[in-house]
Image (cartoon, rainbow, N blue to C red; front, side, top):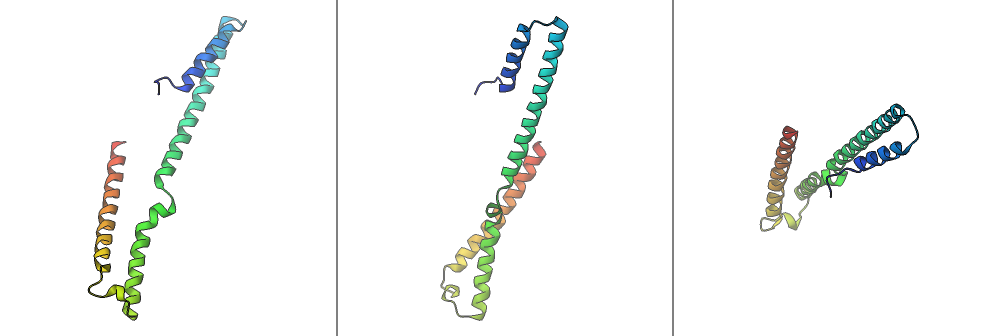
Length: 125
């Protein structure tokens, strides 16, 4: 992508059109200044809209934010059911406990990492 913004290209085109008009020089300058001011205002609005969109995308959807708590709640529900019934998945030889250990470790480390990265990102602004 080139270093020239689309707004700059439009501003150059506007300047060219204004220059070809048969108006006094003072009116041409005023017209060009007014049009460029409007272009800059629209560019600022576009930048703000883009920033708002990026911020919204950064938050993620509900499932992206909630998958770890849902997994851990599922693990808790299985353990709770195993308290009142005999479920083979909760036997001492089951790999369920290894999975729970990995899940809990990943949950804690992943969530801590997210908070650290968020804090670092905010401090760099």
